[in-house]
Image (cartoon, rainbow, N blue to C red; front, side, top):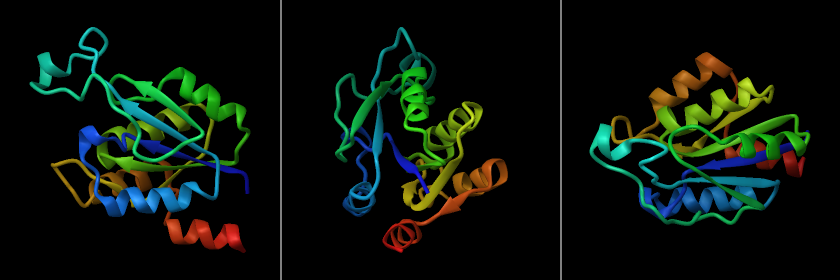
Length: 159
């Protein structure tokens, strides 16, 4: 199966655990990998004005990727989606931070672009509202159905 990995917001601003970063690095070694990082631009997304906080203005992805895209806000950019579509993959594995917000938003964007998003449940972490990510996993299952684990993906690739 042709597939790619989309890593959402795994950047120093959000202080991901080493375990999460290492797990994503392990999986990313097997398939084409795209990362998105969220940077602050109040003119684009009013984080400070509406929420009283904002991501960093400059940051880097903590996992090496074939291509890194900058986003401002929760959703993925048109450029990111176009890049993934040109890879001609059967499914897009999604992992990263804030399962119930930015990761879920990536799922909606991929789905709406005609792609098949699949959540890697053990490589995602929820927001401060639900660190387990279970709320986001449940929402993902409800909206997109497709979930997997890193071990399942790697086992199938080694097949």
